[in-house]
Length: 114
Image (cartoon, rainbow, N blue to C red; front, side, top):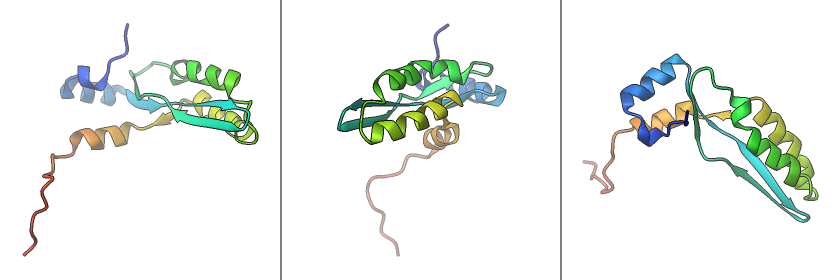
């Protein structure tokens, strides 16, 4: 079963899944090249109720385990932090995604205030 994307779900499906316990999650990963360390976020992942957030984050955790340690000093600092965060389910951004999708469209033209 493929994981749905926000654009493929109707608002009703999204609301139903979130009420059941679904959530949007972002994982981090780290890649180091001796004196340069890159710390990045994964694309947003939607997890249905019952799906393991830790398992979904394993590719990013493994990438960090293999390529994250090599940077001095930030690789050694970021790698344990990222591994800890990913193994605890990543960062839940459900509220932020819902706020962004439910905001009314605003006009780009400034309205005068009288």
